[in-house]
Length: 401
Image (cartoon, rainbow, N blue to C red; front, side, top):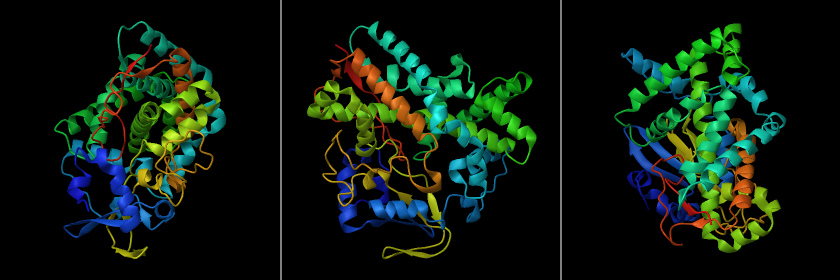
């Protein structure tokens, strides 16, 4: 059985699925061991994961359990960004924050973005057609498409979009290893947003940032720390997971040529192919952290107050008791109630947008390049990013014709 050190290691992604299968069968509420007085747990079975994500006594706000003093003003600002993030708070704050942004992400509003997402995909495909030799599908397509979409929604100037890639990568990688430039990058992110907020206050536009600033001015809805947190969350969550959705699904199709052939012959299968991509190579490997608010028994194990608990979404989505032939990639799968977007009150706000972007991205790509294929030989080991919470490829080199 693997230890916590192995789970957080750089090569864990390669052997993760056999590990999850072993846990589901032998130790579905798995203790990774104790540090100081805190134990860490991984929950792997589908039904257990949904139960964990729904139970209110597994909380997101760790300030209810631990003190986080900071004598450094800049460090305190950074802590406030993450402490006030909608993803990391509980009701009633979570309810208030989600209600504030939910109207901008409802299915009807997202459907209206379809024509613009189509235009962006076509522009990126035109640029790829002008290149000689293989292209990196992530750098040239899967990354720019969602970052352009979320930037336009928020009102971020086009010339500034690429700054967010480094900043968001630094934040995500900090979950595994606090990089030397973490504070520098997050401070730069905050400084950038501060300047952008001042510009929008002086000259409001029809964008999301201007609307959130108005909500802040009206009071009782959003404070400045929450405003920073919301924008940081939307920028990171609004593109990073969709990058993984597009590239992971394409990689799975390359791995399963019979399924790829079926999809190219019938593009009406794009939507179920996206759902199967979400299940098979879930863009979010683990839910964000939860803590036990009190001692509790959970399926035969005693989880103590203050213990860290993680739900393995990837494992739940390969649970043999929930999915027939769970280890097979099948774009015609009919019963596909995966939990790739989470479950409960923290269900991914951007799920409709991610699904639409994925659908359009695949339709446009396969229409423009029906002979697209991996530049590497089949069977080559994928190079997964070392980000504990997520599953995404570093690169995906493809030949377009």
